[in-house]
Image (cartoon, rainbow, N blue to C red; front, side, top):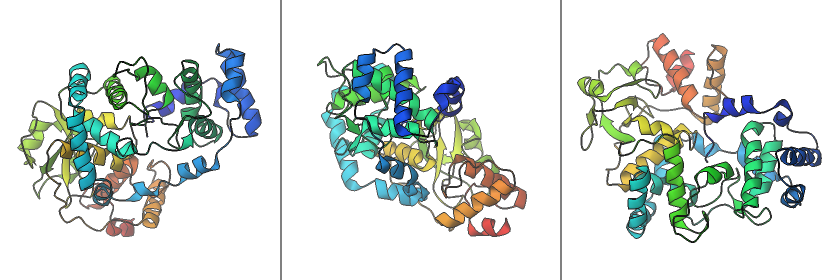
Length: 389
């Protein structure tokens, strides 16, 4: 799901007060959208056609609230998403679209494994792109008061896409959050980064793999992807490492990590770059160096577990071995995680929503409390930590 993390505060601050409203009568809300669209310069007849028949979709709200899959720890999540079939199909598509990937590398510097992994996870290589009406989904989420500042601008982007002939408000379908096509891009992203890679005069992200892949690459490039650089690398770590130095927030020159005893599990570390040492399931589990390109993943999806799995699968598609799972300590159940988040909030930590998901902010808070309590500060919450709190 492509909702940039950095957009939360920026979009909210940029919207006029009248455009930040949500809730209330759905019909009245649609009338407000139409008036704003006309004020933005869209032709009234076009606005009427676009919003004609738009409806609120309860299943979209249900999907938005039910993202329990992200409660799974990295090892389970990765094993669930990465199968031999997906790996083989990805390698087959790499060969099939070899010329497209070569052109992507030339233009944008994005490695094929990165795009293949997104293509696999978002739509199973285009096999299932979602059956939610796109306009209904976007208007429903804009009306909902959970994240209107993210979805309202996408409604107007969808209107512009419709006026350009790139969307049919009645028949275009996609994911529950309004993403369209093989790599699931939101309307604004399509407007800004859509590429006609197959030369047929149209940007067809639902039916043209070259268009979808090239557009995804252009978007990653626009988000700051650094050409020719790695994104993630599995490493081994010494038992006596200072675990408080690990975590996505702490970046060091990779040569410093190397001096501290961190080693590449295969190949060699890129000592030209900086990186963060991340331990998704603590100091007894798998370990990775996250290079600067890894941060760009969070502009595509905000889930730490999803991002790490997508980045790791990109490596696998390019020949990396299966990660060493190690022997991580027992983690927390969903209800225990919610209890932990509540305790962390009570101690003044900003963990975001109490949702039972071990996200980036919860990890930061966990690490701070581990350090305070004299526990291994590896950001992996255990029953022992919950008990101590």
